[in-house]
Length: 74
Length: 222
Image (cartoon, rainbow over the protein chains, first blue to last red):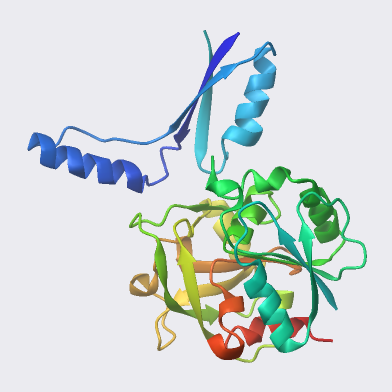
């Protein structure tokens, strides 16, 4: 089974990386192209059920103080 | 007092901590992260560095080292634990301390001396200090302390805020905040005061390196 896990900063968290990229993009395009937030993407090949991958995402891949995660089965 | 200095893959302040202990005449030994026992030790230091290359999130992979089960048990029994820099990140990821250390808000690695206001907390490691302003170096890319509003109130209400970034005159304001930390927080302790995490490096402010680090290390003298 293939899983994708996406970890992203919670909305309330300032994301300085995203801000830096937004600034560079503004210079490149010569205009504001909108907000950018930076997260992490994991490709996982596993025969484990989705619950295990949810636990992996919850306990290891993300920190619930600052991040949200999403597990996608494909 | 016998101090365990834990070494993870990528720890690089282990010898600095040993130096600090040696300067003050505190007995210390290195303990490899694959060890499972802290028997015979009275204090544990999680030194700075880049455990596991800071992969995934700084401190998170070290949290799963065998020795961390022993550290958790040791801390829960009231043993003294100090996490410096990456050690602080390991303590927050391990949930031995609340909050998280994010990337510095200017995205730069910051290496400079800072002034720290001591907050009259319940922290064991500050119990012998009479100074209310300490000078120590910081050296980190991810020292931007973050916690929720509720957690911050909890830290305040329970005297768990130990050190705050300040100016040379002792005033605590945004100008003195090097990395964007909530409430200028540089160090916190747990409810019992036996677990302490801080971003500044007290081991680099003793002996020929400085004086104020001693304010912390001397708490380990018998």
